[in-house]
Every structure is written in structure tokens, then in C-alpha cells.
Length: 101
Image (tube, rainbow, N blue to C red):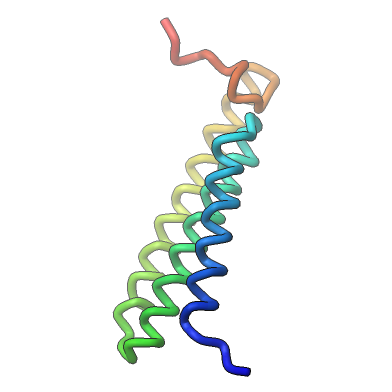
């Protein structure tokens, strides 16, 4: 039994749906960021699958850019979460209303 591109795309779609579900249902900021990272990794899996299927390296190049953006997002996002936790003593998104008037 060989693994085809459809298997990779089904796995990627499942991972993306898990990430979207995590973003929409969870209220903890750290879990939301982890769900966003899961969605980015799902997109990376799709890019690598199509790159391998088509036989070029463009998808792999895009993956490096997505990984760079994900690393920057994680660093800045966690810094913001730490700053908000020090101010409000919670990571619950519903309780953080510092940007409201």
C-alpha cells in the first residue's frame, strides 16, 4: 500500500479543522496560539505534499517562509501573553479587556 497525495491532503485538512476548532472553542490564549501553529503546520504539510507531487522545490521554499513567520508569531505572541498575564493575572481571553475603552 502506497501513500498518495490524497492521504496527505486528508491529514492536512483534519489538522486544519482541529486547529480551527481550537481557536473557536477555547478561551485560553496559549491554547489559541497552539491551535494557530497547528493550522500553519497543516498548511506546511499541504505545501510539501504538492511540492513532492509536482516534483519541484517551490513548496519547500514556501515552508521555510511559513516557519519563519510562525516562529516570529510565537515569540511576539508569547511575549504579549506574558505581559498581559503580569497585568491581569489570567490568560483567559474573555477576561482580558485591556483594549476596550
